[in-house]
Structure formats: C-alpha cells, structure tokens
Image (cartoon, rainbow, N blue to C red; front, side):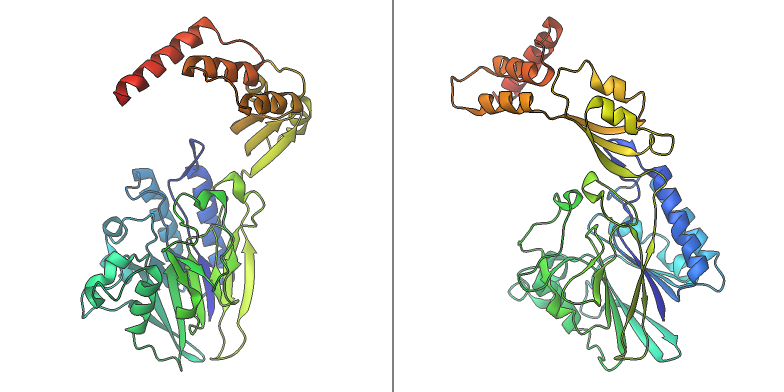
Length: 388
C-alpha cells in the first residue's frame, strides 16, 4: 500500500505579518497534483490543519479547495485527518459525517467515554487489511475520566494508556497517526525556532516511542522538520513549506511510504515541494546584499544582516527598493558590537529614557530626536501608571 504522509499545514499562518495564503494555496495545489501523479492508496494528514483555533474565513476556503481537489481525483483516495494542538476540535469536525461520504475521515479528540475507542479505518491491498488508528493531539486531562486521576500523570501515560486499551491485533499491519512530541529514551528530535513557543523541551509533554514501536508505521505531526525518531518507521513528515527563517535549510516535501506484507521492509521516498517564494537569510554589506537581488529572488521572504562598518542612512528604505518581502534587517559589525559590549559593563544606573537614548545612539549612530524623545516619554509614563 502506498501512503502519502503530510502534516502541519498551519493554514492561516503569517510570517512576520506577511500573509502566506497565496503560498499555501500554491503548495496544497502541488500536493494534490502529486497525488494525481503518484496515485497513493491513502493520504494521512497528521494534525495542525489550521494555525489558529479560530481560523479566518480565508483559511477555511483554502482547506476546502484542497479537500475538493483531492476528492475530485479518480479513483477516490481516502484522506485520514487528525487534529493537532493548534486545531479547534469542534471547528475541525464540522461536516465530518458528510465528509466521510467523500472518503475523508477526521478525528479531533481521543475517546471521552468508556465505550469509545480510537477511530479506526480499515483499508485493504493485495496483502490483506491495514488498520489505521487515528490519535489526535492528547493531553492528560482529556482522558483522565477513562482511567482515573492517579493513573494518568503525564502525556506519556495518557498515550500509553489509550493505545493499551485498544486491544490491537499485532499480527496484522497497523498504522498510527499521532500529533505529539515523541522522544526515544534520552534522545529528542531536532527542533527549530518556529516550535519553541509550544514545545516544553524535556517536559511532561514528551511521549516515549516505546508505546508506539509495535506499529508497522507511525505517521507523526507536530515538528516542522522531516525526521525519524527511535526507528525509521516512526517518522515526522514536517511542514510542506517553510514557516520560519530557522527552517531555511529544510527540504520540504511529502513523505511517501510503501507497506508490503507484514514484516517486510518498508520503502520510503521523499517527494520534494518547492515554494514559489523561498524563505532565506542574506548577510553582507548593504552593497553586497543589494547586488544579490535578482528578478527570480526579489520576492522571497528574506532576513537580512548587514555587516557594514560605516554608518548607513535608512538602510531598510534602500533595501525595499530591491526586496519586496523583508522580514527583518539586522545591523552587525565590530563597531556596534564594541559599543553594545561597553553598555553591558557595570556602570551607573540610568533612567529609562536615558538608557533608551544611549541605545538609540548605538544602533543608529545618531542622537535621538526631540519628537522621538516625546514619544518615548509618553510610553514610559503609561508604563509607570499601569504598574501603579
């Protein structure tokens, strides 16, 4: 059986206040095109469909277009979807019964009642049945009512207990979809800057792969970089496009998995996905950075570090004449580093306005203006009043 594994679409996400809706439409369209080309037997989407729990109307439209594109493929390809930590369960499961008639299956919460179990979809190929178990993002509090407060203390205990109560027939082929932070003993997977706000490194949200190791394949979501953890068959697909500068070097794509008979070697293939506009870093003098601008890269999302030693007049204004999507402009040179180092040395305590004026002088190599002093005075006054 040929499987497409993707995750973390984060529809509706912005990058430094730039909307990514156009890029997301493009990438999701490419995924649907690849599905028509490769004809997988099933498509797995392992969570974080949306970037926010309350998606915008445009975000709904983008996902709807994607599902319609997939539903139009003939013969029909089953699509299995789980909720991630960014998703709102009620919103994601809307029209779930209707979607199942289109061969699209969604699971948004782990079992809530004693008589409920993980959603299981059974598909068949020339070697027989494959059981697909759908485990959406799970917190201990979601399932304590099933086991008792004393038994479920952390995320690992919650996931282990949920899988244990399924009474899985391990003589058959079994695939799990999950959206958690998995570790392998003391080994943690690679992370990037875009994940640091919602992953507690070494914390209670970790789940050890031992509780899922017996599955023939584990399709994971949650991390943005494609990688295996604890074995080649336990795998994060990563995001289909770059969502931060820290993902600059990631090779985005679809993880294609081919399962043969029970116990046979699994085949893995990475199908690349390339954004219409790249996310990248540029470093050099102002002149060097401007010289790198070309027709095929000027619309990229760029983080720029300028290394000029001399003072620059409004460098961002000059850069915006050559790059249309500047995420940030950093100034880094020996002169500024030396000044900042001197500022960090112990010295007299400065009042907030004086400290800001000194910082402004260091960063801009010119004194703060009267107008800017007035603005900062008002801000400092408001902060003092808020404290009181």
